[in-house]
Amino acid sequence: MKIRRQSVAILGGAFDPVHLGHLSLAEDAYRTLALDEIWFVPTAQSPLKENPAVLDASDRLMLLDAALKTYPYIKIDRSEVEQRGISYTIDSVHRFKAKYPNIDFHWIIGGDQVAQLGKWKGIEELSLLVKFIVVSRPRYEIDMNKISAISGLQFSEVRSRLLDIASTEIRKRIAANNSVKDLLPAKVNDLIVQNNLYKE
Image (cartoon, rainbow, N blue to C red; front, side, top):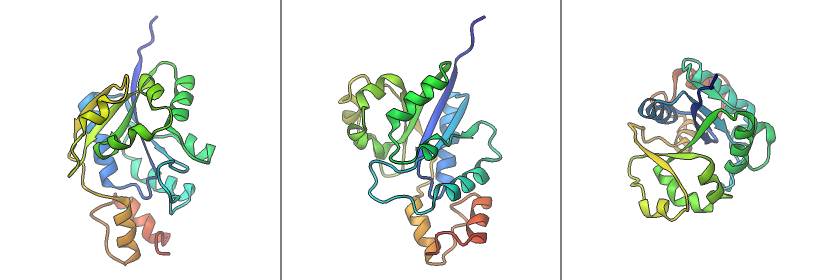
């Protein structure tokens, strides 16, 4: 009996903190492309960011758990934070494909990240292993020349209602004692307040 292959899209990031923009992006990709699941994969340390995450992995995972409880088609994969060190996408994809041979993996990126793809470790090999989902973001037009310059890269474009939210701006607002209720899932906001996160 032939096993049906599943289609899973991965959304990686620091999620420092996870916000409504992340959830909007995941929902739109899931529905537009008829995916089976979305996996949120929090990084230990991104290779293209100079500064480490503000919150440690346990706090970021706590917020993710709270945000995603009501989404049956979204899972959290903790493998990158468990591996520690710099999180390279190519290493994660090799790990996922070895562990889940009956899943076709996609990797979600924002349109603003396309220009960075050439800097990703093993990008040409990676382009043969996964199909990218490029999500349009406010104020960022997808540069098709950057995409076509990478040999073998396959992608689907998703026009998202993604909210123009940045985790950096959320952290600044919290530190300044300004409300971020309109930017975060309610349970995430409550946990940040209860645990006095991002105040220092």
